[in-house]
Length: 142
Image 1 (cartoon, rainbow, N blue to C red):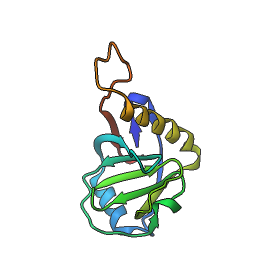
Image 2: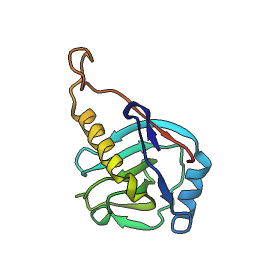
Image 3: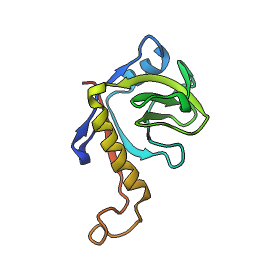
Image 4: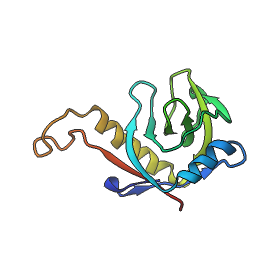
């Protein structure tokens, strides 16, 4: 997974054994590009809508129990979700993978930039370099 605008990328261990349906659908969808978003109230959570269509909820965990770097699939929203800190909402989703430990610092930096983009005011880039913009995320096999 990479963010060209941030010159950043991470690697994810996909849980083919613990979440075979979701993992298989993700593998089948690769490669794809989408737009990065960030949770507003749940906490440090990156979201990106994916061309993955399944209602499977495998390897379930409450958000409050999710560890930084764990990757979830939102069956109702088609979002690939990556957490980079502790979450507060008592919702749950299936864990389909985990970011490699050596890539966690990069994930946190990307998360902070996505958060800054979320809360930035709309406007003219020349007047406000933090004005909202679409953040491209590229999902592909390593």
